[in-house]
Length: 213
Ligand code: SF4
Ligand code: SF4
Image (tube, rainbow, N blue to C red; front, side, top):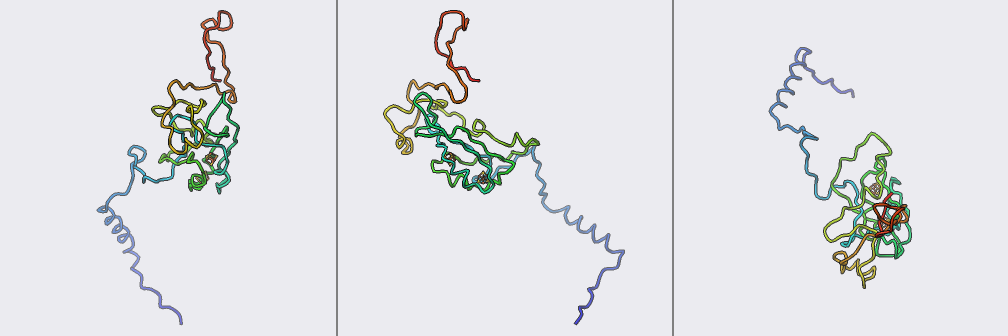
Protein backbone atom coordinates (compact mmCIF):
# COMPACT_ATOMS: atom_id res chain seq x y z
CA UNK A 1 0.00 0.00 0.00
CA UNK A 2 1.43 3.34 -0.98
CA UNK A 3 1.39 6.30 1.47
CA UNK A 4 -0.77 9.28 0.73
CA UNK A 5 1.42 12.31 -0.13
CA UNK A 6 1.40 14.89 2.71
CA UNK A 7 -0.48 18.09 2.12
CA UNK A 8 1.99 20.94 1.56
CA UNK A 9 1.48 24.70 1.92
CA UNK A 10 1.05 26.69 -1.22
CA UNK A 11 4.45 27.97 -2.47
CA UNK A 12 3.82 31.64 -1.63
CA UNK A 13 3.34 30.81 2.10
CA UNK A 14 6.83 29.28 2.58
CA UNK A 15 8.77 32.58 2.92
CA UNK A 16 6.17 33.81 5.41
CA UNK A 17 6.54 30.62 7.45
CA UNK A 18 10.33 31.17 7.45
CA UNK A 19 9.92 34.67 8.85
CA UNK A 20 7.63 33.20 11.48
CA UNK A 21 10.51 31.08 12.82
CA UNK A 22 12.75 34.16 12.92
CA UNK A 23 10.06 36.20 14.65
CA UNK A 24 9.52 33.59 17.36
CA UNK A 25 13.32 33.29 17.98
CA UNK A 26 13.55 37.07 18.56
CA UNK A 27 11.74 36.68 21.88
CA UNK A 28 13.68 33.66 23.14
CA UNK A 29 16.54 33.90 25.67
CA UNK A 30 19.84 34.57 23.85
CA UNK A 31 22.32 31.68 24.03
CA UNK A 32 25.26 33.43 22.38
CA UNK A 33 28.34 33.50 24.65
CA UNK A 34 30.53 36.59 24.42
CA UNK A 35 33.77 34.60 24.56
CA UNK A 36 36.58 35.56 25.07
CA UNK A 37 35.44 38.93 26.47
CA UNK A 38 33.21 37.18 28.97
CA UNK A 39 34.73 33.99 30.33
CA UNK A 40 32.38 31.29 31.54
CA UNK A 41 33.23 29.45 34.75
CA UNK A 42 33.68 25.75 34.12
CA UNK A 43 32.20 22.97 36.20
CA UNK A 44 34.44 22.24 39.22
CA UNK A 45 35.51 18.86 37.82
CA UNK A 46 36.00 20.07 34.25
CA UNK A 47 38.92 18.26 32.54
CA UNK A 48 41.38 20.95 31.47
CA UNK A 49 45.13 21.31 31.22
CA UNK A 50 47.16 18.90 33.35
CA UNK A 51 49.31 19.83 36.32
CA UNK A 52 52.25 18.03 37.90
CA UNK A 53 51.91 18.51 41.64
CA UNK A 54 54.46 19.05 44.37
CA UNK A 55 54.78 17.94 47.98
CA UNK A 56 54.32 20.72 50.56
CA UNK A 57 58.09 21.28 50.71
CA UNK A 58 58.37 21.75 46.93
CA UNK A 59 59.68 18.30 45.95
CA UNK A 60 57.89 16.74 42.99
CA UNK A 61 55.28 14.02 43.40
CA UNK A 62 56.03 12.40 40.03
CA UNK A 63 58.19 9.30 40.34
CA UNK A 64 58.63 8.77 36.60
CA UNK A 65 56.79 5.42 36.59
CA UNK A 66 55.16 6.01 33.17
CA UNK A 67 51.82 4.52 34.26
CA UNK A 68 50.06 7.63 32.96
CA UNK A 69 51.70 7.20 29.56
CA UNK A 70 50.66 3.54 29.37
CA UNK A 71 47.08 4.38 30.36
CA UNK A 72 46.70 7.08 27.72
CA UNK A 73 44.54 5.89 24.81
CA UNK A 74 45.83 8.68 22.56
CA UNK A 75 49.55 8.09 23.20
CA UNK A 76 49.82 11.73 24.21
CA UNK A 77 52.21 11.41 27.16
CA UNK A 78 55.97 10.92 27.05
CA UNK A 79 57.87 10.25 30.29
CA UNK A 80 61.51 9.52 30.98
CA UNK A 81 62.34 8.63 34.57
CA UNK A 82 65.75 9.01 36.24
CA UNK A 83 67.38 8.30 39.61
CA UNK A 84 67.50 10.91 42.34
CA UNK A 85 70.83 11.48 44.06
CA UNK A 86 71.54 13.23 47.34
CA UNK A 87 73.21 16.02 45.38
CA UNK A 88 70.26 16.41 43.02
CA UNK A 89 66.93 15.31 44.48
CA UNK A 90 63.63 16.11 42.75
CA UNK A 91 61.28 13.75 44.59
CA UNK A 92 61.37 11.97 47.96
CA UNK A 93 61.77 8.46 46.53
CA UNK A 94 64.27 6.69 44.35
CA UNK A 95 63.08 7.98 40.96
CA UNK A 96 61.66 11.15 39.45
CA UNK A 97 60.27 12.26 36.12
CA UNK A 98 63.25 13.77 34.30
CA UNK A 99 61.35 14.38 31.06
CA UNK A 100 57.60 14.83 31.03
CA UNK A 101 55.59 15.93 28.00
CA UNK A 102 51.91 16.01 27.08
CA UNK A 103 50.97 16.52 23.44
CA UNK A 104 47.73 18.51 23.35
CA UNK A 105 47.39 17.89 19.63
CA UNK A 106 46.61 14.29 20.64
CA UNK A 107 45.10 14.58 24.13
CA UNK A 108 41.32 14.12 24.31
CA UNK A 109 41.19 15.22 27.97
CA UNK A 110 39.64 11.91 29.02
CA UNK A 111 41.39 11.83 32.41
CA UNK A 112 42.51 8.18 32.29
CA UNK A 113 46.09 9.27 32.97
CA UNK A 114 45.20 10.95 36.25
CA UNK A 115 43.30 7.83 37.35
CA UNK A 116 46.40 5.73 36.64
CA UNK A 117 48.83 7.95 38.58
CA UNK A 118 49.75 6.21 41.87
CA UNK A 119 51.06 9.32 43.63
CA UNK A 120 48.43 11.93 42.63
CA UNK A 121 51.28 13.71 40.92
CA UNK A 122 49.12 14.27 37.86
CA UNK A 123 45.81 16.09 38.10
CA UNK A 124 43.81 18.29 35.75
CA UNK A 125 43.07 21.98 36.10
CA UNK A 126 40.04 23.87 34.74
CA UNK A 127 42.15 25.71 32.15
CA UNK A 128 40.72 25.11 28.67
CA UNK A 129 42.44 27.71 26.48
CA UNK A 130 44.86 25.29 24.85
CA UNK A 131 44.42 26.10 21.16
CA UNK A 132 47.53 27.05 19.20
CA UNK A 133 48.47 27.25 15.54
CA UNK A 134 51.82 25.50 16.06
CA UNK A 135 52.16 21.75 16.68
CA UNK A 136 55.38 22.31 18.61
CA UNK A 137 53.65 24.72 21.00
CA UNK A 138 51.01 22.09 21.74
CA UNK A 139 53.61 19.82 23.31
CA UNK A 140 53.74 20.99 26.93
CA UNK A 141 56.95 20.27 28.79
CA UNK A 142 57.53 19.42 32.43
CA UNK A 143 58.46 23.03 33.15
CA UNK A 144 55.09 24.18 31.81
CA UNK A 145 53.10 21.49 33.61
CA UNK A 146 54.83 21.67 37.00
CA UNK A 147 52.78 23.41 39.72
CA UNK A 148 54.01 26.77 40.93
CA UNK A 149 55.64 27.28 44.31
CA UNK A 150 53.37 27.99 47.26
CA UNK A 151 54.25 29.32 50.68
CA UNK A 152 56.68 27.03 52.53
CA UNK A 153 57.99 25.42 49.33
CA UNK A 154 61.49 25.50 47.87
CA UNK A 155 61.97 24.76 44.17
CA UNK A 156 63.32 21.29 43.34
CA UNK A 157 65.92 19.85 43.39
CA UNK A 158 66.59 19.95 47.12
CA UNK A 159 67.14 17.61 50.06
CA UNK A 160 64.29 15.79 51.78
CA UNK A 161 63.04 17.03 55.14
CA UNK A 162 65.66 15.77 57.64
CA UNK A 163 64.68 12.63 59.52
CA UNK A 164 61.87 11.67 57.15
CA UNK A 165 61.52 8.98 54.51
CA UNK A 166 59.44 8.66 51.37
CA UNK A 167 56.52 7.15 53.29
CA UNK A 168 56.35 10.17 55.61
CA UNK A 169 55.71 12.38 52.59
CA UNK A 170 52.77 10.25 51.51
CA UNK A 171 51.44 10.13 55.07
CA UNK A 172 51.31 13.93 54.99
CA UNK A 173 53.88 14.36 57.78
CA UNK A 174 55.93 16.87 55.79
CA UNK A 175 54.01 20.14 55.67
CA UNK A 176 56.70 22.58 54.52
CA UNK A 177 60.39 22.79 53.61
CA UNK A 178 62.78 22.42 56.53
CA UNK A 179 64.31 25.73 57.70
CA UNK A 180 67.46 26.47 55.71
CA UNK A 181 66.52 24.26 52.75
CA UNK A 182 68.25 25.46 49.60
CA UNK A 183 67.77 24.57 45.97
CA UNK A 184 70.48 22.24 44.61
CA UNK A 185 72.13 22.59 41.22
CA UNK A 186 70.25 20.72 38.49
CA UNK A 187 73.30 19.04 36.94
CA UNK A 188 71.14 16.75 34.77
CA UNK A 189 69.62 19.84 33.16
CA UNK A 190 72.98 21.35 32.39
CA UNK A 191 73.30 23.66 35.39
CA UNK A 192 76.79 24.14 36.73
CA UNK A 193 77.98 25.45 40.05
CA UNK A 194 80.50 28.20 39.58
CA UNK A 195 82.25 30.55 41.88
CA UNK A 196 80.25 33.76 42.04
CA UNK A 197 82.33 36.89 41.91
CA UNK A 198 82.00 40.27 40.32
CA UNK A 199 85.28 39.49 38.55
CA UNK A 200 84.35 35.89 37.81
CA UNK A 201 87.32 33.92 36.52
CA UNK A 202 89.86 36.56 37.55
CA UNK A 203 89.52 37.55 41.18
CA UNK A 204 89.26 35.67 44.45
CA UNK A 205 86.38 33.17 44.65
CA UNK A 206 83.49 34.36 46.77
CA UNK A 207 80.52 32.03 47.20
CA UNK A 208 78.93 29.26 45.13
CA UNK A 209 76.41 30.28 42.55
CA UNK A 210 74.10 28.14 40.44
CA UNK A 211 74.08 29.12 36.80
CA UNK A 212 70.91 28.05 34.98
CA UNK A 213 71.51 27.38 31.30
S1 SF4 B 1 43.61 13.09 29.40
FE1 SF4 B 1 43.37 11.12 28.26
S2 SF4 B 1 44.17 11.57 26.22
FE2 SF4 B 1 44.88 13.24 27.54
S3 SF4 B 1 46.92 12.61 28.22
FE3 SF4 B 1 45.45 11.89 29.78
S4 SF4 B 1 44.92 9.77 29.18
FE4 SF4 B 1 45.88 10.78 27.40
S1 SF4 C 1 52.57 11.50 36.59
FE1 SF4 C 1 52.09 9.79 37.96
S2 SF4 C 1 51.76 8.02 36.61
FE2 SF4 C 1 52.81 9.60 35.39
S3 SF4 C 1 54.99 9.09 35.56
FE3 SF4 C 1 54.53 10.58 37.17
S4 SF4 C 1 54.03 9.34 38.99
FE4 SF4 C 1 53.92 7.98 37.21
